[in-house]
Length: 574
Picture: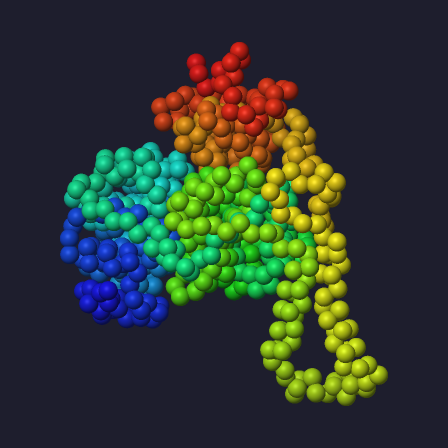
């Protein structure tokens, strides 16, 4: 292993990373730092969040900047504003002891005027999301003719979010002699095509699973019926009193609903999703980093770029569509010399996915039983006793009250005193989990007589809604079909992107999404029905004309069937 001191980094940068606690370079840093310091060769690296890639490309770029010039010399593109801000902060930290070096983040949802002023003053490195970067480029505020380094960070996510056109436009404006660096957690065909179009004789590296291939992360899953996911999540939280976790959900609506329900029941949780303003996101993340929030409920996109190193758990409330995304999520725990746990809440219909994930990981994923009420009560009881044993007592603060307390309790024996004290703290768990049923299932059907637990009574076990039926939040949903499916590599994130772009509206409620082989069925707030059907008139996806139609009334059996619709109007074909 080559230490940082022997890589050719200057004294100012070495001092900055020492302040940050950097000791030994990570695998990707060992490969990228010498490469970028000594060659102008393009680079393609398969690397995920948590591998240290920001320092891997950031340190050598910062060292080679011409600080006498005010021109932008490096442009770093990333998918989300959270990641954009995080990268900019990291670069500023790396250059703490380098005077006169300026980094500017540019992203949507923030003041355009502030970003324009920063660019006009002069910035050596620009970190941006594709949309805002292209906007500033078109306004001729951002100038790229002096760019020496182009970095695409999380290229797969940028493409899946629909930024192909923006990336093409930006990369066309970058000088052909700029050194291009592409980092991606996965290498789908779209990323490979992008690399082939804009990179020349690039060196390829792969360190995607470097920090989770060890025994630092334990993988497990719980098999439950669909209606019991939320109850299972609560039991996981109750079984782990010191939990510090990110819970990954599929949709922003689901994150809000879960966070609201858990908060109402006294759990220290909050949601992170695309509807939050930057100020709200910073507030939530500040509380999470300070551990005022013990569980962060988030979508994959919203969690991009979060830099939290001591998570105890990653919980997959829903398995992601992409196997590599499971690895990406799980890699957020068990970092450094710490251990972590990755747990998935799985419906019986998803069980076959576990075998595929095991192949990707190269290790088994243990099937676990959802903790029983008795197990949780036992764990919580001993957690309480341990807290009593280790609590720091300040007699100088409570000494004045002790004589009165001793006098009041002197009639009790030691055994009575302990029993009553434990009961004060513990009765709610005993009451809640009294006669609690077993949530684990091998069939996925559950017990037809089950009513669920606190907060869950009265829900329909099959999870279905008929057309026009209101959900628990009062929204009336319509059901629609789009002629894009698995064979088109269509994902929920792409659907969200399309709806946001075409309807030009925020906070549109999206319900269930079912992606089939040739098409996708989804629910949307019925108030937007006419606008939805009208707005997709001239949309294309990968050269295919996109068709969105209302799902036929009475065809709910087709909701879960991958059918060819023979004898009906064939969706997606003109």
